[in-house]
Image 1 (cartoon, helix red, strand yellow):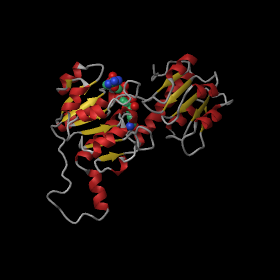
Image 2 (cartoon, helix red, strand yellow):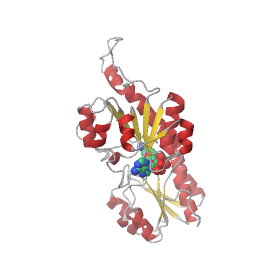
Image 3 (tube, helix red, strand yellow):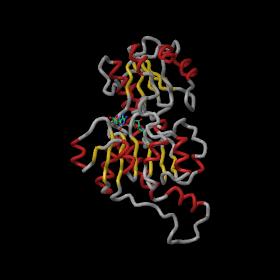
Image 4 (spheres, helix red, strand yellow):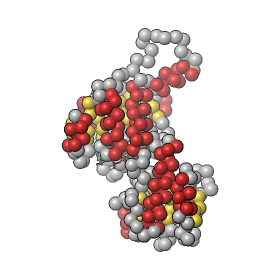
Length: 322
Ligand code: NAD
């Protein structure tokens, strides 16, 4: 019987699938992220054949070592896999998988919720009303910005970026600019979108939405220089990974009104926020929940389990990260 370790309680669809396939499943009993030492302790000597891990687990050579040479696969419960040392996994012949696709629509919905919320000052007005400050309709109260027919710049036109473009183009008739190492002529044709370099995108967009993976070359892709290139009335949205934006520079940009606002789901040093960020009114901060719907988290759980089952039954898992 194959043995699988799940590093934290997740929706049970995945464990159910694994058990139906005859796997013995252990789930970490800790109500929180396992420290690296705790994770290594949980794996050491237990002879697990597979580990279902989360983006909050730092998976490196020490962890692979603790899991032992019988362990065939680490299946990440996320589309991003910047928490895993891929080079060492490759060296050791350990398969790494992720959960792409099943969360695309949900993350795009959350991204668009942030676009609308920051433009229409939803969170600011909610705080104001709750705090008893609303004393009646006023002609100049919380004047925001229209989204329809504005220009959206998409940095990283992959699965999620394309779906955000769909809402923007089809729903709000936005003009679309995009920047990606791979141009996509079919997309350009369908959405009347323009492929531009990052500088042009920064200078011409009213809303900029980031959808690139975290890689050495995308770390601090948006820093002081890039923020200074943006329009003074532009908004920056990030639902990808925190370190893609230099958060300290962003706080300065928001304080000194280099840009009008930002809406973030991810942070440079999660769960910590850069000093001053939470005190600003022109920013919306969600808690890395862009894929957090009941339906999507269940699908992610199932997909991570499917990757494990395929690997343990000797087939190529569908979402192998290369
Ligand atoms: P994807 O691989 O389909 O798309 C990524 C796109 O970025 C690709 O088109 C790629 O060519 C492009 N890209 C790579 N390097 C680039 C660069 N230097 N400049 C511009 N573009 C570049 O991935 P996806 O499924 O769309 O997910 C995107 C990212 O979103 C994931 O890597 C993950 O980190 C993040 N994410 C976050 C959440 C959340 O909960 N907030 C949920 C899901 C995914």
